Image 1 (cartoon, one colour):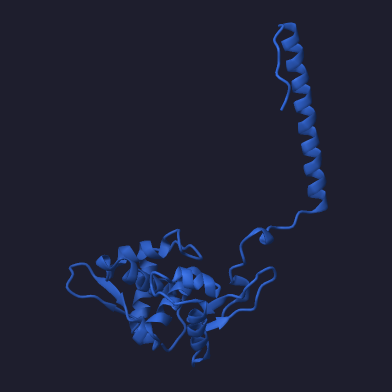
Image 2 (image 1 turned 135 degrees about the vertical axis):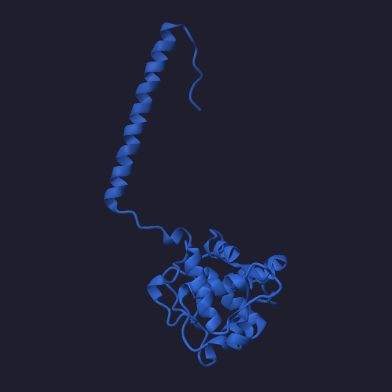
Amino acid sequence: MVRPLTPLEARVLGVLVEKHATVPDAYPLSLNTLVLGCNQKTARDPVTNASDAEVQAAIDGLKRLSLVFEGSSSRVTRYEHNAARGLNVPDSAVALLATLMLRGPQTSAELRANAERLHRFADIAAVEAALTELAERYPPRTVLLPRPPGAREPRWAHLLCGEVQLGAAREPTGASDADPVSVGELVALKAALAQQAAELARLRALVERIAADLDIGLEPPA
């Protein structure tokens, strides 16, 4: 590979690696299947909406880098990846790179889980060893990102598209990521709850008065 990939080229290559392992009966992939794989809503970060023409341009770019070839023996043009040979990495590394290309920066534990259908790693240490080997080769293929505030573990990213823009790295998920609530918002929330409580009390008093007029017994509130 003599130049960085575009984000869409990386997505296309990742999809080919993924579908090769997960739906071998449909592999090599047609352009239509590749477009669907690039734009699917699950297991993708970020979610894209690439057109047929854009995906075809990405395929053509990957073909010039010898990372993708046209399949044979089909009336519909189909495509297959050549990632291991084109990137000069083992199949286990291809699985990790494809998972990073499809899902963005991830921790070692996330990578082990998300790459399991592509390659089964014995443990997290095996994942980290493979990632470290990719980071130490020339040119480096992966990088360990600085641990963001609130995160327990750092995340790994691929370098196939060039240097990682840290601002684009996925933020950690969970309760700690919620936007902080201001004092003003807390005061407004308490006022709204107090207003709702007063309204409920007024409605209950009205119901009790009507029930008394109609001589209907009411159960005490729980």
